[in-house]
Amino acid sequence: MQFSMSDELPETQLCEIAIQGPIARINLTRSEVFNALNVQLIGELVELLNWTSERSAGRNNSINDSHGLPFLRVLILNSHGKHFCAGADVNMMKDAGAASPEENREDSMRLDLLFNTLWAHPCFTLSCVQGVALGGGAGLVSCVDHVIAEPRTRIALSEGKLGILPAVIGPYVYRKIGSAQFRRLSMLASRVDAEEALRIGWINEIVSDKEEFEEASSKVIEKVLTTGPVAVFESKKLTLEFDRWTGSDDDLRMWTMDKTSEMRGSKEGQEGLSSFLDRRSPEWSPE
Image (cartoon, rainbow, N blue to C red):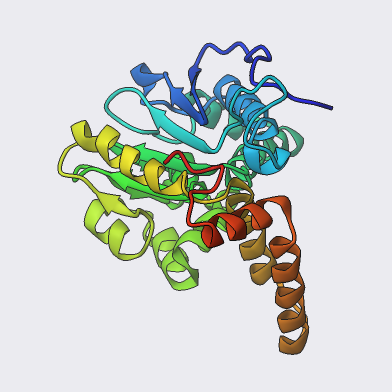
């Protein structure tokens, strides 16, 4: 199936999307409840993530669609209001207590689909995090590639305070901050300030005020747009291959050599090597 950037966008009520060239911006708009995740918002986010993924330059192995419109290369996930995301909606938590095991599993499956779709997105993903990111909000933070915070930012695996576990978000947080930190913070279930989050790799940079989010985002976007979009997508798959590798070291060495040969012979690899030898910018670079 051929996808086009002129295709109709999904209709949403609790979040919004804006497309500007190769950049998609998704904003959570439930600011009155601190962008808490309910069933509707989760569903809308998954739909937008799938729509943008299908129209990514990396997945389509092309900078532009058949109409000459740029495919997507960067996805920004932000939110309106005082806080980035307060986690699960209070009504969802109330319902969970009275729900059957099957119903609770369905809720978990919805959340897992959201986190996995964001984590595996073929575009470079970025979030600016203001205020708190608790529970599921911490999961969203853990799934993106680059996180910008402000001094007031606080992140927490808060599930333990309710006598439950950060299990659904666990694989993504674990990959982000590592085994020891995930174990410690799951037990403490307390809020991590911006400085500690930076130290353990939960976030990537801190700006002095959230008014600087746009400028900081622009600098990151400027850098990533000089990287081949297929290379961005393949970097995510390469990392996952390393995470899951169970073969021998010799087999891994052979696999990496095969992968290098594959990428060098690819359309993007050929363009990158040719542009380097010709001392020009590659076709994907905005310069």
